[in-house]
Amino acid sequence: MRGSKQIQQLARQFFALSLVDGRLSAERVTGVLQYLEKHPPAQPLAVLKAYQRLVALEFAKGQAVVEHAGPVTEAVLKSIEGAMSQRYHRPVTSVAKARPDLLAGLRIRVGDDVYESSVSSQLASLSL
Amino acid sequence: MNLLLAATDASSKLQNLQSQFGIEGKYLLMQVISFSILAFVLYRFFFKPVLATVDERNKKIEEGLKYAEDTKAQLASAQEQSAAIIKQAQVEATKLIEEARKTAKEFTERETAAATERANALITKAQQAIDLEHKKMLDQARGEIARLVVATTQRVLAKELTDAERNRYNEAAARELTVV
Image (cartoon, rainbow over all chains, first blue to last red; front, side, top):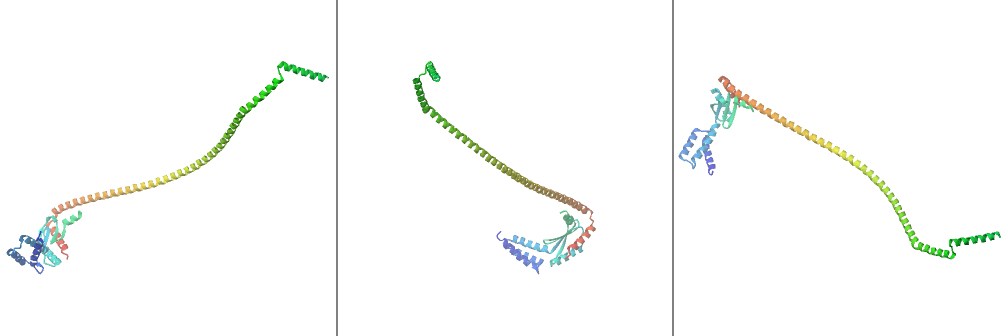
């Protein structure tokens, strides 16, 4: 595993270059990828994987995946975006994802955090 | 004169008598001497040792009787002592038996109490185990019933909830989750 630490360090340096005011910038990410294409490091695939993981984690922190059963209105999604942006002190966008097994209600994922208020979770708590 | 005649007559009669029986003075004297010699010899060599032996025997018998008396007295004393010892031994034995009985009774009572305590502890433990098992069974039954109820409810809700109801629930959930 020699070089693994150096790969992580290089990926973190590229990731730091991808941020503008602490937020992920699409332009910077594009620039980093172009640089890597022109000047590939010793182990380009490993570096790209590590960089992609960091970008995905950061991207997930700015995205609220709203899992729902039944219809969910645009106003609800907007209210969720506003509340999460306020909670995490950064812009958070919402993405709706249908989950009929929730029966009714919502489950919101922001990064590693999960917020849930659904019929299935309440029924599951009853059966414990 | 008469007397003299009478004495003479008597003397003649005596001489007649002596002559009739063959008694003669010198033979009589010889016999007396030989008898005396025989008597002396017998006394000296026969009767005296015999008498000495008899005396010794008598002495021994007396000593034996005395010894027997002493022995009898000692025996009586020994019997008295043995009776006293036996009586004392009986008293001590009675005392020991009483103490043994008392100790045995105390031991039995103590063992009985300990056994009762152990039995009660076992009963309590068994009761606790039964209660625990009963509670566990009830919990399992309750959990299974709850699982069945939840599964049934999920199936029913999945079929019965309308979009409008889901929408209302989603809006309520959004309000709950977006409270900062």
